[in-house]
Image (tube, rainbow, N blue to C red):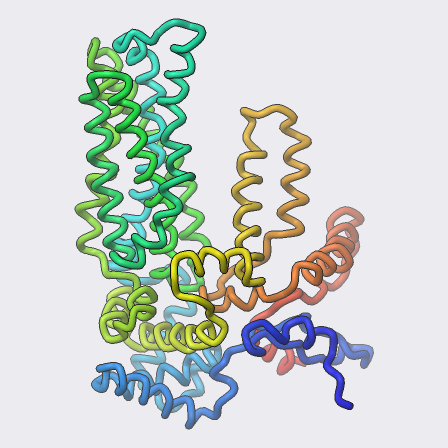
Length: 467
């Protein structure tokens, strides 16, 4: 009987075999040594080059892109072996040069890519400014509404007015993101929330009672929650894999920039008398107004359009976001191929089915608590809480056990990263990486870096060829 290895058994229900055990290679002593415990497989490698070209051309012709059939054929060959495009004879010199330039210039991209990313930065700054308007307003709006006593009911009201945006952002805004994105797209959802975040600060500025101010901030929080969940997704779906992580992490930087600008606005209008708090709250409409106008000039997410069957329109969006058609076709077709792999294991299409998938589908559940770990750890590391040092150690342990490396992987390949069972991941961290870290960086021993638990197939093949 031909028995499966333990690794094969672990992943038999994940991605239909896309995540596979790694090959072995010999070290200098002749012993067999692993390159990585698991490999992120390129599905295009399952087919011959000729078959890949035929499939890509058929994809273009069947989705109203027949004029790009030849381009997709060449792009599929590049996607099949992205590190060896120099040996693909079907490429012309300009295409080969564009791919080489992209490889050597990590941050290279067309104007529209950087314009769209910059607008996402404005979306992040919107949150920071919305948060800080109330900091200055707290000095005067309680007196305006007769709730300025230092104890009892008044303090609860002031606290509720301040806190309500965070409560509604999490309890309402975050939960309506899915239907808003489904029906209106990324751009449409961002525009709707930008309108909300433009109107509610103005409404706050014209409030006639604390109840009116509370209601305006209640709706403001819903807009913040819905926007905050969409803008990073939109940014990630537009950005190339090589810089996606860095761009998405800029979110926190620009939130802080928004906080700074909000405090600046507070200081600028603080001496305007009784209306100072109104100006401090109302000034938060500025970045959201810019966001709402600017989003009209951005392309829709190519991945969203693809998932909704608008393939030709999705490719037109991708063309605006990449420096050369061969790069756009490569990224778009590879995204389509992996998307087809996702559909093989997709479950229900309804809202509650997708919500349940966050906890029921193993790879999504692992990604979910990995992201949750980052958010919880962020709060635990704040110096405004007690037991600061101890909570930092707890946060370090949580990140060590539950947060996985996703650097320079496509959104589709991340599925395979989270297909590794948690038990296997933590076991590798404790028995391989932790001992290596202690020996290398504490005892300063010069030892070889151990194999990772997961690696891209192209890199594994490079290591094998080097051997």
